[in-house]
Length: 180
Length: 372
Image 1 (tube, rainbow over the protein chains, first blue to last red):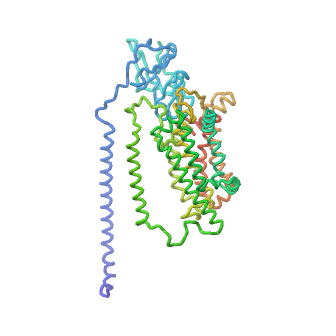
Image 2: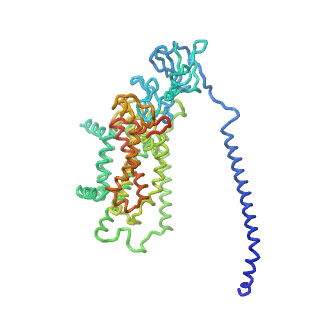
Image 3: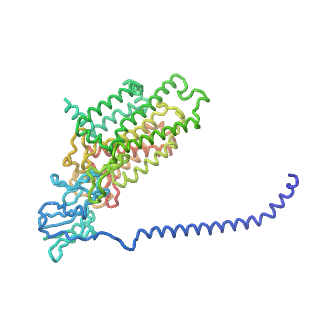
């Protein structure tokens, strides 16, 4: 013990510059290390993100042929395409429109109830009129309509990828309904 | 005679009636302040937390379930394999509540007599973690595993056909432990009920130890030493969570309509549930005009009401009823506490507004998906 005591002031004096060097070295090493780590994480995230955009996407076609207009009964909601395409086609007089069977509350599939003439969602009880306007339950906005047109052969063509929202005033758009 | 009982139960189980009865009795059964405590004692409600109380309660519950099972509609819901945990809940939650309350009431009495609580005998009288606690945990673990294996062998898993996005089962129910959240979603915007409120619940549970600065009741059961804390917590737990799970399980039927326990689950049951926003009530129904174009003007009353509820009410309560609490907790703790409490009571308030006035949203700004 006694031999070490006089050495200590020497050590601190001589160590001061090397400590400073050591600290700088340490800091730059840390910086390099963190940059490398961040780079690796970023590269990995980019790789993972890439999976969200596959080269080939096997999606069912968004457009389908819903048959001739006279296959639909006036005033009725057609459940024909609900199971396959999630679309109701409604005929009101000469007008046809396609409603998306997707509740605007949390995305369950509502059911058409003929005796009450409303769409009723089984998850939280939202209800919609034939037109798609929400009137009961928690759904914040009306059902969405999608693009419908008459093909040259006289068939109804429904395009699910184009939507028309009532709250944005898009149901007046002539592409959102067909008049025969 | 039986039909009268059944329709009586159906009437009482109608959530507006059920919640009103519960709200009327809850804070007497779990007294939130001295005045409620006096009522509790006048009615002799502490007798529930005795051995006789739990036996009578258990027997009555069992008799009711046995009586109910004779009814085909009741049986269809209660005997459904999905609902086995909830039927277990009917027994387990009250039992453990009783177990805690029994010891709390006994301790309260001891403390009133100037004695130490039951848990306090002498400093040596403690349970050792090893081996005592670890052995108990091991035994519990083994028994629980056996129970789960037997259960899964005895009852078939209620599996259904392959999922189809265009077909939702009717009613489409969340897993039982989320049914309270699903119930909240009926009354609030998906953003509020699905994101904000669950986050608030978690944060509130984390905040409890920081809000509660009452040094009493640590390490032993007691009720009277922390009346408000226990009463409010039990309200959240028993009414907002457990009761809503029960409502979602037993009372929500096709199209998410309410059905009594003895009522047939008719898919075509029609209830008039036309929901109207506050702004529509004021402008369209009250003043007979169209909704103003400006969002601020349209939602003026909603903003005012919400402001009064979340800003005015805390200040008012701080001046009046909760003045002592404000002094005890300090401004910061008090603000957090009162905000969480008001958010919690917003749920029953919104439920009543929906049931009584078919009010949809107090503040409805679908333009920004912001509805309250």
